[in-house]
Amino acid sequence: MNYFKQESERLTYRALTENDIDSWTEFFENNDRLIFLGIDLTRDSKTIATEWIMKQLERYRNQGLGHLAVIEKSTGDFIGMGGILPRELNEKAEYEIAYSLKPKYWNKGYGTEVARQMKYFGQQNKIATSFISIIDKNNFASINVAKKNNMIVVAETEFLGMNVYIYGDAK
Image 1 (tube, rainbow, N blue to C red):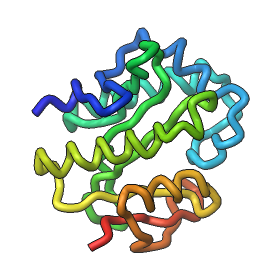
Image 2: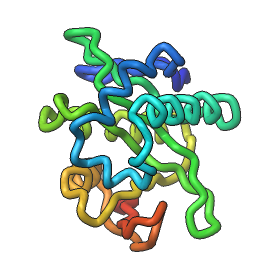
Image 3: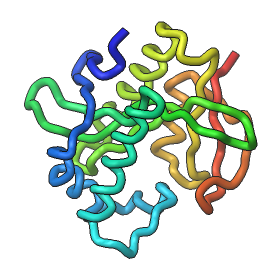
């Protein structure tokens, strides 16, 4: 089991480094889906990207999990992030399958590929008995990915100031 070195059909996954900050900054530019992240968008893109990656490095140290860099095999391009995120939700420990892709890589099936890989890895390595995805109620693209990942709505709540669905494993 090496969480930090995974592979799926078209993608590879590796640990993020501070060297990824400049490339990740691109995610926060001309992206109309940032409203679904529950972050302060008044700050500049480089600051947000830096904080995002530093948060993952902290998760690696403290929890052994977090977003990984998602690399397109055919080009070697850093196209986004995906991973298993330990969360506390309604006073319960949960493991979230999460991903974010740069806009130019949307609508290519990569979100589904990342989500399925992370769930598969988590199940195979017994990270948890079940997984969730926390999705803004208006984020229809991510809702579609959760459904393709065999997840259903198991709850509704507020998270990071957003009204969200909690998708969980379909039984």
